[in-house]
Structure formats: C-alpha cells, structure tokens
Length: 318
Image (cartoon, rainbow, N blue to C red; front, top):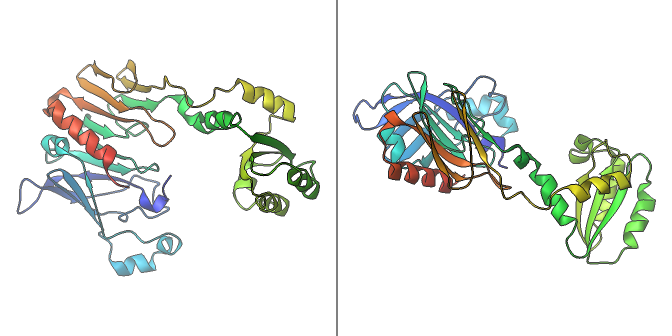
C-alpha cells in the first residue's frame, strides 16, 4: 500500500488545446467526499493528454498549500506528475469526453473514458471503480482473504512455533518467560487474542506494547497475528486454521457484468459482452489488483493499441 498523499482520483471534461488541437486538456475535479486529505497533485490539477502520456500539474499556488491545514498533516502535493497511458487513450479520446484517471492504494493506475453517458474505454485496475451504464467489474471475493491464506501457509514453515497470548488472562511477564524458554533461531508466531485489532495495531494498551517490545528482543524471527473474538480458545482457532487453504487459490477470477450479462475471466482470457471487448491481463494477487481492459466497439482502437496501453499502465511507476 502507498500513502494517501500519493493516491489520486480525478475526473476531467477534456477539450482541445488552444494552440495544438492534437493535445487534449482540462481541469480536474475530485469525487465528492475525497477532500479530507490532499491528493498527489492537489485538489484540481490541470490535465494534459499528449501522445502516450498524461500530465497533471498542480493548480494551487505554493502559498495556498502552506496555509491549508491538510498539508501540515500530510506531505504537500507535487507540482507535476506524468505517467504513460500508451497509444489507445489518445486514439479514442474526443473533445467533450469525461476522462477519469486513478492512482490507487496499490500504486496501480486506471483510466476510463465516458462519452455521452456511456463507457467507451476502461483500462488498468478498474475493479470496483464507477463505470456507469450498467457496467461493473469486481474482484474474486477470496482475494480479500489473502492475509489469511498467507498466514495459513506460514504456520507450516519449517521451525515455526506458535504461542498463544490471551490479553484477558495472560500476564506479560509470565508470557515472556515462556517465550524466552523457547529455542533460539526459530520462526516465532504470537497469536494475540482478547483484544481489538485497532488496539493492537495503533498504539495499544501499555501491556501489549511491552509484550511486543520484549518478544522482539529475542534473536528469533517474530510475527504477530490478531485472533478474532469468535475464537475463545486456542484449540478452536487452531482447528479453524487447519481448514484454511495454504497460499492464495490458483483459480481466482475477475467478474465482469454489463447490463445483466455476467462473465468470469482468469489470467489472459478474453471475451465479447454485447459491444464490449474484454481482456484480463492479470487477476489480482497479494501485491495488487486485477489489470484488464474494456473497450466499446465504437472506440475504434486496434487490439494492439489497447494491449500496449494496458502494458503501459501495468508498468508505470507509482
């Protein structure tokens, strides 16, 4: 994940540049409700689509960023940000189109083009984004559990030892004595029960903070796992974990729904849904969301251009 200040969601109504009609420009807006923190290039940057590249330029003055209280808490927005979108976006975009550009929490990018209220093009990490016109893209729900699958696999690593700590009952000092009695140079996993995840993750009670500090004094590789409240005993939690698949499932898919017609696609698969060509380059995994494209038949871009643009978004820097 990247910091909120590095993310952005901008929408712009594009028009031709005054001096160069091949360049499309406009001034971006952010969706309602997203102004609590400053986006990467500020609240309403200038947009420019020139060839294969989109450039965003901050519109706020440097002085205004100094006076805005949000910028005192978060890093100030950059003056300019450019990323490659490949040839398809410029080939399809027309004056009057509504273009949206995204840099999401996984540093993956997405571009959508809406014309007369209908989606013309969606490229990149578009799952879960507003696409309108009865078009919806969703991730496999199992992907949300990747932390659990990954943890289930770690439980079976060689020289792994799991110790149970119940914050409601265990004393930190006695627990540390148990940990210190364990062999050195093992993979130690501390399963923490009896506390809220928020308390554990964000400056929890002093006892829990002391526990983590003391345990990490050892030479062992240490990781902590928060146990949900529904597991009242160590045995019930272990029984559940024994049933969890080890590692991410290899049959994850992307769900695409267009005006009531549904399809599930896996890595590299393509299909035609009504007037849309759909191709999944990569299904989401531990490190990022799915990358795919949806292109309406009226877009007029060649499949090679679309593929090149999808590759460009996949490889673009955060």
